[in-house]
Image 1 (cartoon, rainbow, N blue to C red):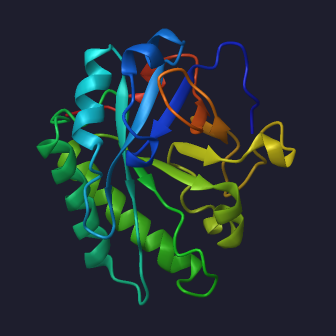
Image 2 (cartoon, helix red, strand yellow):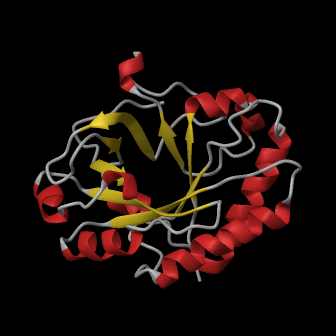
Length: 223
């Protein structure tokens, strides 16, 4: 996949684990976009989601929401649809009625144990989630996942490579760019470290590279 360049926008992704954030300082530091954890497959809503939405937007930060999915065995497509509905409800009830400045994201990194679900099972689950979320929001859904996870699930059989990809692959392991995986030859967003530092956030934070224009991350679909 492509490397970062001087034109790649700088972004972060955060959840309640990042504490109370000074979004004005984050924006002034040169961060161009932020993804905020909205909810979780356990049925919870991130306790800082509403506050992060409100304060980030007040600081002029373009934001998107992500959902940490929890598929379980045996394959249950109704579970996938219910988690997508939970994601959309979390956005609507916590200040993101327009579903964000950036396309919503399915965060898929479970089951981490090989053999829990098969490759085809996981692809079907993700498709059911994405189809439901897309129908409810009229927005393209981006897939976040780790290169390791794609490879663990036999490259998803390249069945999901039509989706925009937010790839997690950390440069401190030696990669200067994510390897071609799962049928993807390009990323839309690249989470290149979980050990970044940004003014306005205490402790380490995930850092992301984006495209040269936020228009590529909006994901509006024809009505």
